[in-house]
Picture (cartoon, helix red, strand yellow):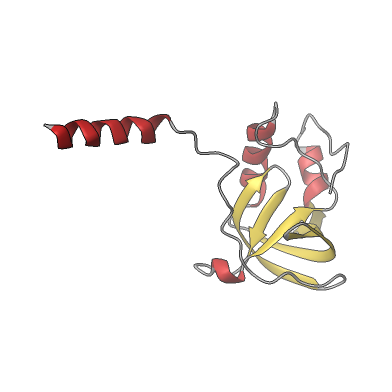
Length: 137
């Protein structure tokens, strides 16, 4: 009886505990230096303006990228989850070509392109309500 109550309690706690932006992203690859051009498939989208690219099944080689030409609200802010979904629809599983800029925290700020079009411009064209304004690092 005690074991079933303990298991039930653990299941309830797990069900109501939010899984959100506090979780670490899986991107652990080395960051390219400024000026380097790199190309890879998008494996993970963290929020509306950050993603990871790299080889399948190798998060130790995934590069974490902050889009240089687009701002999206944080996940916990109004519109943050919608911005993430828009970026996922646009790039997840697709190959991007990126040009590395400076580093910001544990990621590289980069201009990324899909079929020659800036991802930031594609997001703005898709009607993102933020329109890429208010850039942050």
